[in-house]
Length: 510
Ligand code: ADP
Image (cartoon, rainbow, N blue to C red; front, side, top):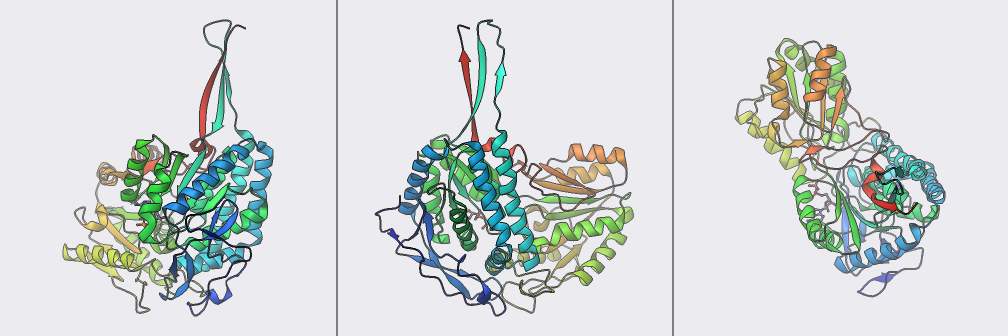
């Protein structure tokens, strides 16, 4: 339970933040779901400090949110630890039905949740609705998996023995999430954790805490017991202290993080001292290879979907387009036409918008720096290339050709609407370029040659491959990377293992 350390409990309903700012949206946000306080031990809590959440489309404040610090983080861990003692003993079927109720509530509140996502992340409302469904499906999926946590029976050499393998929940999981999928990055972890019998403390990204808090409201309504799902929002300034408090606390058994590789490494250091289990979903540098045998229309459609979802701000977005010389000119021409015809930059609440703003000025500056670096080294600007006339965090969808491997846009994850095209001659060359990076999350390629499809799918050093497909995420399939893109898998039948411990029990004297 949350007591002391400057933490003040509020009786429901708490004061609400003013929902103001973006001209065409947030006025319509549901006050019932727009919670400004942290959620610890089943209670809304407010420390002395608060921080503003900004609409990335206008820079206006959407409201102030509780700025939790290390004391609140530790209290949340204690609440989660206390709750774990009870939650792990709740029957799997009951855990399953509570997760299912949470899923149902997400679907019932789809429109409202989507508006919150659009308001705080800027993504187009249709994409935000898609995210809510995707996020909810993780709760549904893991509500089903909760009832399928099986052990094993093994026959060892000694005839009077039987070996049992039990799977048991790890304990309290610290969950640190990014802003680009404010809802789905939480449910993908929390669904698995709760299904396994773990409890969680979530630290959402400072840009998008409202989605995590709306989920707390719905978890509460679904009857998820107090202390099982806790949320400690905090400002960017306090992220380091809260992260350290969560990830070094001896009561925390597991860290699950999605975000940058740099932050992931900091958290791995924290985990080392008390040898915590970790799952890391870190940065990528996805290649998108178009071979001469590809169907160019399909490849362009896949490129559009894979590059421009969320204005290029996903870790599985194509980052480098490698196009074989025979199909190169036709692909670049058709890609440019599709970008011109299909992409509409604007406020995410406007019907026509397909490209919202980037999350903040740092993101805009990064894309800008990559474009100017590439052009200064000889790349050709086919389309876009600068800040959009809408101002603030908007950037033009940009296409570069004649890109080479020494340019920043080939080496770094862009996280923005920039598509750089590198021309190559042979399959071997394409695979070598694709693999010449220390990360490996997603990779895509287009080919109609079955032997080539096998060869390349096996050789790409990534955790996920799209063959003639630009969008490959689904709750049923394992999401995760190799190399410095991370550790572990989320979603799918494998995702729940990240929250389970294996215990071997030897029964002797039989
Ligand atoms: P991005 O650069 O995309 O914002 P980050 O890795 O910085 O990615 O952020 C992802 C999440 O990690 C956010 O919730 C952020 O607040 C959190 N975070 C950033 N730095 C730290 C840190 N030192 N310790 C713990 N969490 C952190």
